[in-house]
Length: 121
Ligand code: SF4
Image 1 (cartoon, helix red, strand yellow):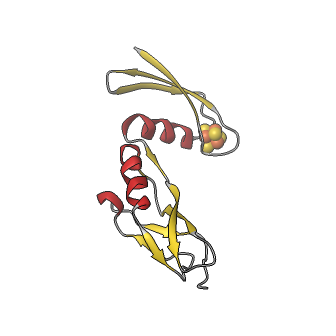
Image 2: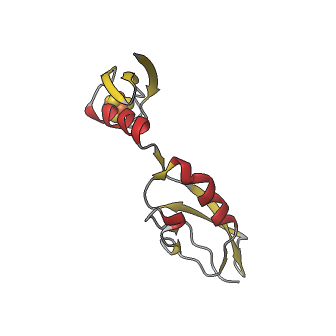
């Protein structure tokens, strides 16, 4: 039996959640105040995912970069590839909040969108 500890990021309470596993089987989850904590650690153990935030270069705009983020979480092992792909992109101003910067980033089925406006100069 292996024991792992997590801090749930589901809300500011930050519960310490302990999980006992045997191989790939989860035997017990304790310490979570609500079911979201159990969902969080189960996902962390079986399919860890993260929202990715980054910056993308912009040409001809009032700012040289725009902040972007994935519209949903993507597999943790795709984060490096995603960040690398975003480094290759140069957008043309204007850029509006919600503009799709990359569709289906790295085959994850998730789009990357702009989270800031950059006006044309
Ligand atoms: S287990 Fe529930 S109450 Fe505790 S941090 Fe996670 S979401 Fe918040």
